Length: 272
Image (tube, rainbow, N blue to C red):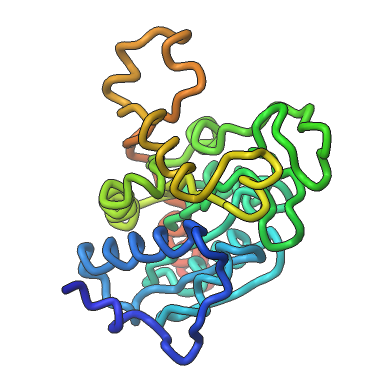
């Protein structure tokens, strides 16, 4: 049996997540990935901002920071530069990471800061009232879009690739075992690693859009997800409306905190 109790703060339970929420599935996938990667929990710093996903650090026994809205990656960058020996993991929601935190997300990927960012993408602002987020699909309803969103949605993984991330992967809460394997690869990657986890929000997203229960949403992930290897052989028309899962991007780049440490040593040498 997996030793979840080794990683959890039981005095912080019960959790706040709604029945059917996918946050717990992503949390368990992350813990399995950390166990598989053999990274000591004392070497991990888990950073979050504000939102449903961002409650995650409160439940786990790591070095944890629960920061302000949209600023998780900014805090994580400072932490990595101050303590480069730590393994930095950021958990964030689609709103937290790509709306108010959008510039931090883009520039951390551009700099290739060594951190693993897990974005729980439920297409909505769940904790703060069901407002439309940057990933709310065109035409779908939210509390701030009662007649349907008229904005095109962000492709989180595509944005990370374009900005310069070293590793980008996507999976869903239905594909939970694949998800923990992708997070493992992100943890072991040197540089900015992004794992996008599509997760159901049965309360604020499913209800106004009449998507059914959390089980119905998981079934939709099952029926509409295709592996990236298969997607490459399909036409654009065949891929339309599908969720492409797997490793989307994997490359080697100079890492920012390494260069920062080199600069520190160089300047110390000049002072002598």
